[in-house]
Every structure is written in C-alpha cells, then in structure tokens.
Amino acid sequence: MIHIGHQTNTLLLSIATFVYVGAMFFYLFVLVFKKKFLDISGFVVFVSAFLLETAGLAARWIESYHLDYGHIPITNLYESLIFLSWTIALTYIIVDIKYKVRKLGFPVSLTLLYLWRTHRFHPM
Image (tube, rainbow, N blue to C red; front, side):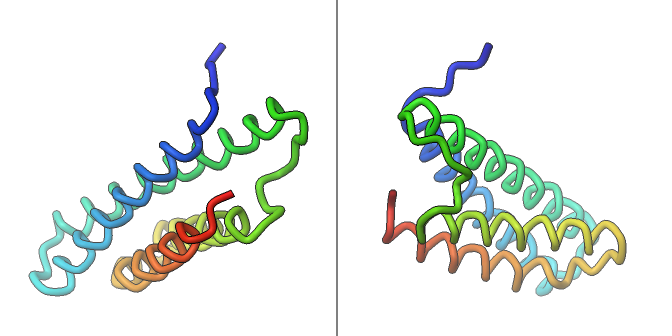
C-alpha cells in the first residue's frame, strides 16, 4: 500500500509546475527552430507534467479523507484552478493525439502556467 503523507499533493503539484515550464520551453523552441524531435519531446514532457498533476490531485483527494473531511478537490479557488488546468491539459492531450496540432502546445502551456501561478497565491 502506498502511504500518502500530509502535503504529498503540494510536492507533486510543485514538481508538475516545473515540468510544465519545461514543456513550454520545448514548445517555444519548436516554434522558433521547427525541429521535429523538439516537438515530440515537448509532448512527452507535457504528458509527464499532466501525470504528475493527476497524481497530485489524487493525493489531495486521499489526504482530505485522512483529515476527516473527504471531498473531491474542487471545493475552493485553489482546488478549482488546479482542476481547471488539469481539464485543459487533458483536452489538449486528446486533441493533440487525434489531430496532431502541437503548435497549440505553447499557448496551452502558457495558459496552464498562468493558472498555476494564480493558484499559488491561494493555497488551501
């Protein structure tokens, strides 16, 4: 059984933030240098950030049960912005897989970073 300690979600979500920054730079380099390997690398990094964000949301949900007020993590501004960014990322991944529109990667990453930056000012 995996032990989810207090504030595990914060660590996972913080790491995801930096990984999204990495994805944004890959996508920016794709726009500037037009190299295919950067395109694929950016998508892999973006998906990695999404998986970290998913783990962070799941950890937050599990931690809420350990604190005896279990709820889905969308009950305040902080959680709602995280969930919104998760939903946008999932939508982008689905659209990218289906239509191969990786040029949207940079603006999507920038939008997610804006949401992440906004929610950093409203913890818990």
